[in-house]
Image 1: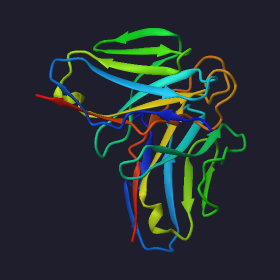
Image 2 (image 1 turned 60 degrees about the horizontal axis):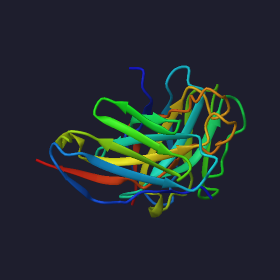
Image 3 (image 1 turned 180 degrees about the vertical axis):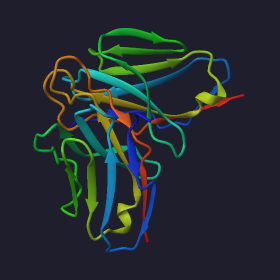
Image 4 (image 1 turned 135 degrees about the horizontal axis):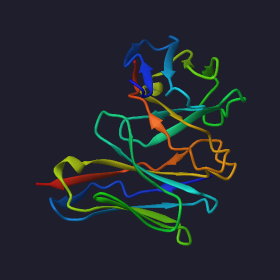
Length: 119
Length: 115
């Protein structure tokens, strides 16, 4: 069981509610990424964590989205006041190191995703 | 803004033939290139990565990179029905101190291998 895990696997919520999605990266991986994939679409980058550094939030679509990573390991993506357009699969990925070294170690391994449905 | 372009397909290939998937990217500073396979309803899984110009072979898969032309391709030899999936091309700056925004993914090419 050394892969990336995510929970819940499915989440159905009502418009306006807050949701929290969890990601547990591969042990020892310092970099963690969140992506969103809407039906029939490609992967949309949301946020990136590298170790204990401040995250790169450049992909977050609105201020309703936030994420944190505690202790450099588990991450939680929070969506406040959910909207129907937030419905998507939220994918988490981790890599041994972020794109800062010179050893090309940024191969990302994906978790199974959380399918979010906002009614 | 970094862009990665792929033909969405579907690309239909008879079983046993070679499937050729192409990807172009806009950022000349890109250093790392990945091909992921995604089955319907599943998360992406890494097939191959390539960093240097030329060909890289792994079993039935060959990745080809041409940085001057800014394209990367994936060849699948002896295509099998189980190869039917969406193939995502991903590009990153990795290894050069940049790319803090993660990989940039194309929208994927839907490949169908006809028995």
